[in-house]
Image 1 (cartoon, rainbow, N blue to C red):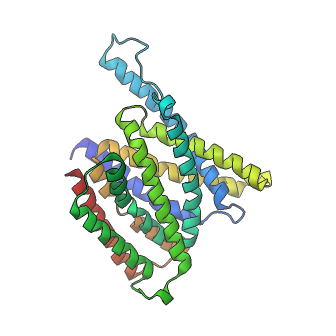
Image 2: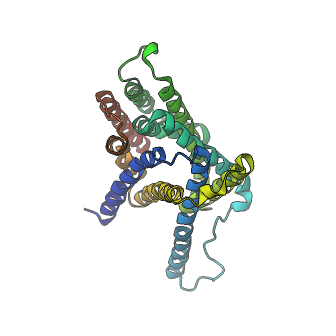
Image 3: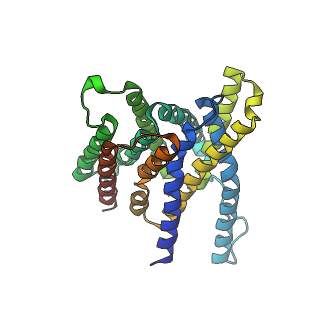
Length: 317
């Protein structure tokens, strides 16, 4: 087996674990910590995690440039966010967008639960092809459209538990699912808008994660302090601090594993590898939160995973 494939499988497997843990940690937050401050501190912890990684990446890229051409001009080096001036409003907009999304992430999971929420977030592949077509003019096939509908059928089966009667629906869960669908949609808008920056080598994904979390964290924390004027002891309470650090670390680790897997494997293979994250979320939710993984959840999960595999492989072709 190729060395890169092995590394991709390892980082992918770790990523599946970290992504599966995200809703579990989010739903285990202390009572004194609301969604707003949870979002703010998660972003700030991620900023602290990604800053040294970004510096290491920066030095590594410049070292590689020097090694490829030992006579290269010292001024000809890789620059951090080379196109930041012309992209400044886009970067601020992305930061604000992900700030809102981070709040809604906690709100949505509170209402939908870990299993339903994790399944809902797998619709990223659908929104990815939609916005890829609308914004980047990427090709969409009829088979992708068909399996996108099948993917949503799997989600409906899981959420409704095979009960399509209006009277039997849990409207809190439905509202939570709709919120998570919204943030999944907005996430893919943000990722699609930043894709040209990567194509032009004006920033790397690691740099983009750092800058968006930095902007999101500062905006969320400052507005939280102004609007709610909280007791500042909430930030130094040991239980709360533990939650902030664990939530930010788990969330950040999931992102790192995703980008490392992408560096070793093709996008279609990496996406397929991450497709079973609802299964790990269901296992953890059952063990730690007491949620019930039903037969309808199983059927919905299988349909969603198969749909993702078909959609991403069609995109590759």
